Length: 331
Image (cartoon, rainbow, N blue to C red):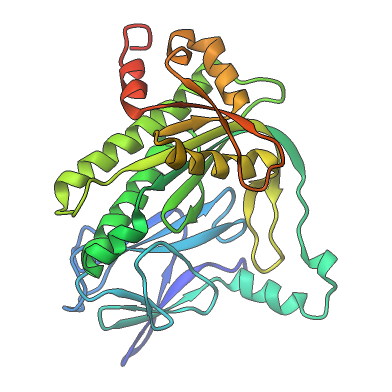
């Protein structure tokens, strides 16, 4: 029988198995509206969320993330409180309120045991596709400062809401969250072998615009010491796409210079003091399909960390993006 990822709920009366199948997101809490309901009075009505991020059957080529939703008494992995999305590993011990559970992903556990004594090159999966992709990285600005100025419960609820909604927006526009990276998300759109269609470009910018608007909406829900803001980088080019992990930790992702550069582009927006930075190839497609929008970009020569030569970055504000997407030509 195929191993099934699951939560093993531990109590004085024994163990209860909660399979994590046939979905990608499970809400956990005391309220009956949740997918996994606990009666523990120390658990909040909407306590936490489990999210599967992958490209195949559950547990085969993706990760399970645990995200606290601002619960009053916290969510813990192996005794450490969760404040940003955390990857779950086979055998992790979880605590929701006073309810204990174990995360079990038998496939990972079996492969880990089988890999012992095997040479590294046989335990590591290889990249298997060279594809034209676009990569989007969205980062929460001044996150470290924010963590020092608001309490842990508020931080968990705020960040949990942001990550959850960002993931839903990205999925709605034809991609997935490839990585949660502390205070940022990375999404990948895989294109045809030779070029990108107009609608594909439009989906990426619509996703980014909705994430920005969602961030502004969260600002009205929380009493924060300063406005919650995001910055973004978008880059287009060829990359190797496939399962890059080891046998016990598969990781379906994209690797290559296209991916490396997008993080540097996003970082450059902080130095230039702007919101959005595009790589040259992305800008070319914008110029091709949306020439009036392309005219609003500023061309900047930036020195990206790790690159010997200066790079061109094309930058604009979220206000400009929003105005363009609501212009008569695109509505």
